[in-house]
Image (cartoon, rainbow, N blue to C red; front, side, top):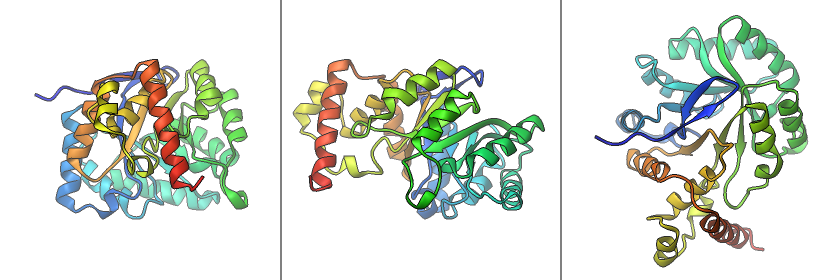
Length: 281
């Protein structure tokens, strides 16, 4: 029997979650129904029953919802993007219907878009029992005023307005570990990390096999994933894939635990060099 992945606590929410979750951005919308079913079965097998999606991820959410209607054991994290109250309500009603649930586990304000009004709306849904936990997501400061800023994220955490934050962090882009992660940990807010592989960019130039052996890793993706897990503030890291075998490999990496300090620094050095090469710097 395949071992399950470890779990970490989200103190404010009062629950433990698997350290590995399934992301769905630009992946499962292109997967056939059998592969998607196999992907969810892989998640069940390793005890990583956590999925994260959004209404704006093409048709990923409705396809996922259809398969999860018969399986309430999955922790479902999804998002709201709209700022008009009528639109927010309409999308949320579709989500509840799609999953066949009366309550969504984690509903997040996507990229902090309209976060002041949307967080107030989320609080009302939580009080009404339609949302179990609230959150916000942050990838980067958007141009043209779309979404919120890093300063907004810091404010939401300091004001203790949510149960979870989801952030973009990987070995080449670690700056949120300097202030956002410690602040979330102090408040007991759960941290979900997206893009551990930089949407695949960091996988384009893996280091040598010898380098990986010195790290105690069998693959570069394992090293990058374990780098994220060196941060004890992180509750769950999302890996977006449509291939069950890749998710199982990620689960094996998660079971190997965090890297040591020296190994983590070596991973960060190589990841930064990959990012600089790809950006032409």
